[in-house]
Image 1 (cartoon, rainbow, N blue to C red):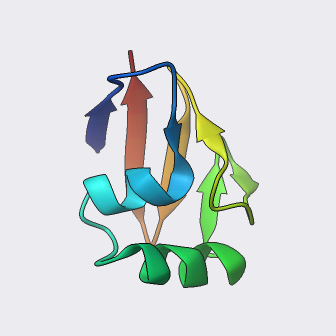
Image 2 (cartoon, rainbow, N blue to C red):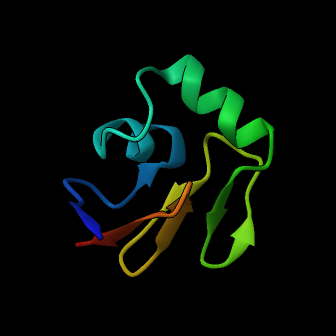
Length: 69
């Protein structure tokens, strides 16, 4: 499980996927999110700009990212 430490109040979903190294670019993040391949807290998420806050978890292709303050 990858952990991302927040520098601000939140991080956007697309940025989190890039920061964790699960996608190569923002365009890649956009496509996998729009295709319904990413879930946030167990729910499929289609918004690249979804704000992730402390305690949120993201799942993509069997990888999990935990967001921490």
